[in-house]
Image (cartoon, rainbow, N blue to C red):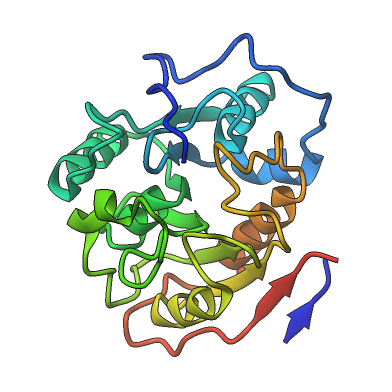
Amino acid sequence: MTLSPAASTPPPPATGLFPHTNRSPAALPDDIISALSGYDIIMVPGLDGSGPQHWQSHWEILFTENNLTVDRVRQHDWRHPVRAHWRAGLTEAIRGRDQPVLLLAHSLGAVLSAGFRHPAIAGALLVAPADTEQCIHTDRARIRDFLPLPATAPDFPALVVASRNDEWLSFPRARALAAQWNAELFDAGAVGHIGNKAGPGEWTDGFRALRRLLDIIATSPRPSHEHRPRQAEIRIS
């Protein structure tokens, strides 16, 4: 079913918020605000962290403005990722949460999230996961500690968001990873790596992917590794 719908950056500040981000006005749809109110939202950045113009930083401010609970993972070293250290950072971010956790992850953070297991996680948006196995990006050696990619599906609903011209992930590989992780594939169009360099700003088109993930969580039981891969592919018109 088809529906229509890096240069290094400094690590984020301790608060995770960017009060001086140059933002264009955007409104978070009311249905998304209502659905997100039942979750603790955690941003999971990728290689080099998410700078002020990254969609994760824009969304973080937007969610806070709408009185949603949002935080981000903190790492000691964003430039030289070590899987064990990054797992510890994600574990710490989830610790002691009062509500189910929703992971909004990008690039290497999406790979980290896809291979993570924690009973508090209700679902994950896996945006432009970095293909540590087959990408041809010149910086691929920096992510070699994340080899191999997770081989089994997470035990929570997930949506893989992929671009048609992402230097870190080809679209055919995105389709294969979505099937491998029992996730739907959301076609974001030709928007690069959807990150610091190819920055879509507030990335309001991403709200469609977020809404779809929330629908999946609301309408399906907690998936297991034995479930068949979802075959749906979502496309932005």
